[in-house]
Length: 358
Image (cartoon, rainbow, N blue to C red; front, top):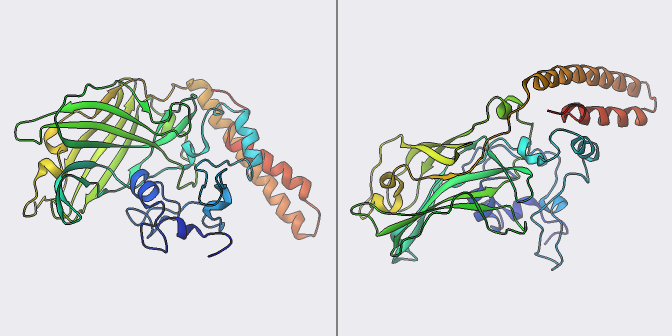
């Protein structure tokens, strides 16, 4: 036991001392904090706060139920006051910090429920979810209150469904009152000759917040109203088939939200007793992974956008000059605390466009 549990105790899928968040962060949402060899898949970047030696509980406070009830929600303003103040005045005041500062996700990229073995017994609902790979950049959507946030999106299907279920357009929030910002798009049931009765299909849409790092570029959002996330994955379940690789794209625009171009890249070798209708139903279901709605990025005023880029370049030059002055005066032993404060405020404003509206 330790007074402050280290982050490695909270995560990493059984490769550390505990496995609490193996199913939510690394595997399902794919927003790894520790990254590197503890990410799914291994090799994803670590969060910028890891280098600062911050543990999970430094930001995620204990909830009203006491020990063990750690809040999912965390705030940046306790440490980044100047940034929060700048954001409140900026064109991006309705944008979550992680919308710009999370650039790649891992974890599940496909999930298919079908016949298999669970606990050494036959089961019609074995979960084939080990389609691990990077998805980048995250798609941005509005939460229940209209604030833009990044999400992880991937296709899901479950076979052996007897009844027919109609699709529901758009997103359904798991907690409409805002307790969480996770959602799904119910696509309805589908079937094909030789399949497992009906397949219920949906798109999983989950809020992400890690790994935080250097911001995305302005162009990655504002070059087009259409958002596209590139996805590459590797299947390596112990059942169904030998490991194989594939890819897909997640597209969000005025027409809706969809997953397209799902393709197998390497050769698929089905194991004895395996069947694609179970572990890879998506091969047979076709182009079903879409829901209607406007998921586009708002179009920016191009003149204001160009003016913004020019003002940011000027601001960065002034900030660099001021930083050099601070370092020089500090080396002479001068008191530069007030100047440092001004520099931090200017840096926050310059990076977060508090002086320009789009």
